[in-house]
Structures are given as structure tokens and as C-alpha cells.
Length: 271
Length: 320
Image 1: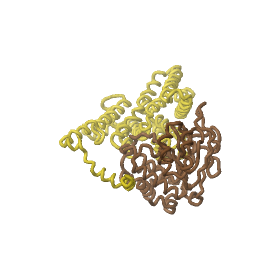
Image 2: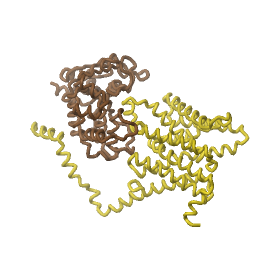
Image 3: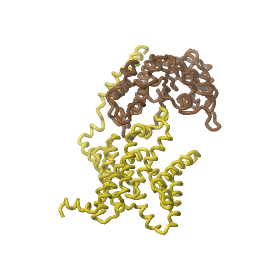
Image 4: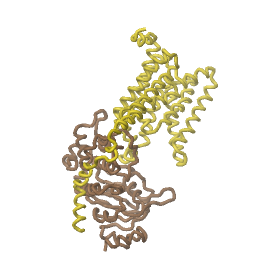
């Protein structure tokens, strides 16, 4: 995968500063400081303190309505905090930043749009081109590499609406890879995808981690969180627990986050 | 009359030459921007802007100013107003558009009704007066039309991204409000260019019909843009011939031709036509068993050989 190798990536994406910067500074840092999000008078998140640093994959767990999506949107800058702030490499940020790549749970796009899989992926290559020039052979090659990395290269010319849900999700993942950000925020990437796609996601997260990227994803799958993330954040509008899977996924913590119901089947697994 | 003479005769008149060039520009510009209008579901917005421009034109006319400036000011105010009404969170965009466009249009009618030439002015605005296109009008139309096309070429990727995936556009730091305003400005300019030729009621057809036809004929955006421009220009010129020989009003002739081409594409588009797809399905009936039991052995083989799937299957067997 040429685009995942540091040298090729910086050669074909010269102005993807995020990519180059995180190569030199493996310790990219993303922080939420006393983060609070309110919708009208309803509070979705309260006083959340979190620090993410380069090279780790973190899963966000919590029941429906716990604020997992809200947290990811706030970290990405899509939602502005009501209280507190988001810091990127120590600097407060307000709004979206190119270094942060956000992949929503289900893209709300018009599936009848006359656009090919390759063109969707090419959207991930932003900035730095001349306005008049079409995409260069190198850029198209990089996009095809990204599609190959998610097993979608053979469908590059197909209209996006012709794909199955899982395939569409893979194409948006390829686009996210091409954005060459330092931080990847994914909302429920494992929901509604088949086993091969889950395996592919885990493998991709590993590669990104090795390049010093931060991966943060929301999930409902406790077993997957336990096996494929370095760290688990348990959330229920407030921070319930934060640490290694073994330290966080205890019956006591889960009961506090989920209430009684989710604990019984899972406590056997942790024991 | 020979075929050639039939084709050439209208151009003996200077006004027909100017009219043809004017409708050619309108066809191309509206066709291209119309593709984005239809993809974004903004047909009603286009109609609203066409009506909202009316008071701007009228006030400019009464004050003796440039009608173009008046039209753009009015269009900008209305598009901003729609955004402001949307902020209440209780009324849909459609509703906001409905309220403002009717209100603005009424204001225009009220002001122009104080003028002596009321009936003639309103008719010209509503239905266009293509045969009255002067040299200066034509040059101005060409300049604005070229400007709109150039801006769309320069910003094609951003316009496409915003039309296709707004969440993604916002997440890479694009200012959605600013890009929407740019698009509405380009749309307003396209409408202004079209007012004199097709009038404010039928401009909607120039925005929507060629673009819809192009979408039936292609799954690729660049191709659809080219086809829409071609169909728009073709409808314009063919419509003028129809108007010349059948003595129909010019604006309505143009729209009738565009609609006829749309109906043809709707029925006979190679991949999306109502007739063509049914015929293809009917021809397929020679092999009913193929339809009922599609051969999926390749897919199944693919699935089994996917590397990510194999470890799971092996692991399962070991523990079992």
C-alpha cells in the first residue's frame, strides 16, 4: 500500500502537512478539557477530560444516548463545545481542522448522485492542486491504492449507489485514508459490516497506529473493544472509566455505565 | 422552400440572430448550473429566486438604475432571508421560500402597478421578450454567462463536494454557508441572464428540464454537465425555429422543445428509459431460470478466500 508508506505519502501528497508533521512528531495529542455539550437545556456531555496521543487505538463504549457520537463530533470540531475546549497538540481549536478526519456512522449522502467510487475517494485529496488541472496520474494512483487497501479497487468506476452498504462504508474509509490526517475519529465503524470488513478495519487501524496516528472509534461491541483497542473509554454523559480494556471492562464499571442489563452476559467473559 | 433556405431564412432578420445567440447562452448556462440545482433538490429555490428578483428589477426600473444590480440585491436579500427564517428551527426551507418569494413578488407587482406601462412591463418580465434583445443586452448576457461558467469550472470540486456530502465538506473545514451563498449567487446570475429571453416563469424549465434529461442519459457528472449544456442550447435554437414558423410565443416554444426531448429520454434512455428497460427485461425472459437463480458461485468463492475471513473460520474449528 504505497500511500501508507511514509516516503510515498509525503511525495505524492506534498502539502498534506498533517501526514508529514505526524511523521516527525509521533506524539500528536488531542485533548478534551472539561468538555460539556448542551442541546438547548438538555446536556449531552458533562465535564469530560480526555487525552489521546499518537499511536493508540481507543474505543468509546456506552449505552445509547451516552454521548458517544456527540463526543466524536465535538472532538472533530463539527460541534462547538458549550463548556471547556478541544486542544490539538496543545493549541485550543474551534471548528474543523484538516488534521482531524471524521467518519460518520452512516453517510447521509444522495446515493443517486452521478459520481463514481474513484471520484468519491478523490474527494479525500484536498488543497494543493491547481484549480484548472484535473487530478494527476499520481493522485489517481494514490486514490486507487487507497481503494485497494479497502478491497474496493475493482469497483472504482461504478456509481456509488450501486454498492452494498458495507462496500459504501469501505469507500468512505478509503476517502478518509487519503485525507492523510493525524487523527481518525470513526462513529460505529463496526456496526452493520460483515466479518471480513471488520477484520479489514482492525488491520487498517493497526497500520495507522504504527504510523503514529490516533484512532478513536465509538462501538457497541464490548468484545471487539476488548480485543482490538489499546484503551477503552466508558461513557455515560460523564466519563465512567478510562484505561486499558482489562482495567475498564469490569462488572462494576459496566454496571455504572449501562445499568444492570448488559453486565450479566459480559461478566462471564471478563472473569 | 429548400431545407437550407428554411434554416437560413430567420437569420435575415437581425433580431433573430441576436435572439438565437441569446437563447444559446441561456441554454448552456442554465443547463450547466441546472445539473447542480436538480442534484441538490433546489428547483423550488430556483423558482423562488426568479420571482424574488422581480421587485429588484422594478425598483431599479423606477429609480432609473441598472436592472442587473437591482436583481442581484433582491436575490441576495431573499436567499439570506430564507436562512434567517430557517434559524427558528420550526419552519422548513420550503416554507421559508414560499413565504418570501410570494411576498417579494407581490411587492414588485405593487410597485409596478403605479407605473403607466404596467401591463406591457409585467408581460415582458413574466414571459420574456426575446425578439427585443439588443446588442448591449447580448454582450452583457455573454459576459455574465461566461463568468458563471468560469467560476463553476474553477470551483467544480467544491460545488460537487457540497452537493454530494455536506457532512464531509464541513469536516474538512469548508464553510458551508459561504459555499451555499456562492452557489445561490451563481444561480441568481444565471436567472438574471435568462429573464429577457425566456421570462421569469419559464426560466425554471431551462434550469430543470435539460439537467433532468442529462441525468437520465448519464451516470457521470462531467458527461451530465456537457449533455445538459448541449440539450439546453439545442432546445433554445430549435424552439426559436418553432416560434418563427409556427408563430408560437418564443419562450414557450423553447420550453416545449426541451420538454419533448425530456420525454424522449424518459422513454428511450439506453439505461434508464421506461420503454428501453422494459424491453430489455422482456428480451431476458427467454432465460427465466437465470433470473430466478442467479449464478453466485464466484461471489461465494471470493468470500471464502478473503484473507480476513479465513482466520476466523479456522479459529472456530480449532476451539470446536
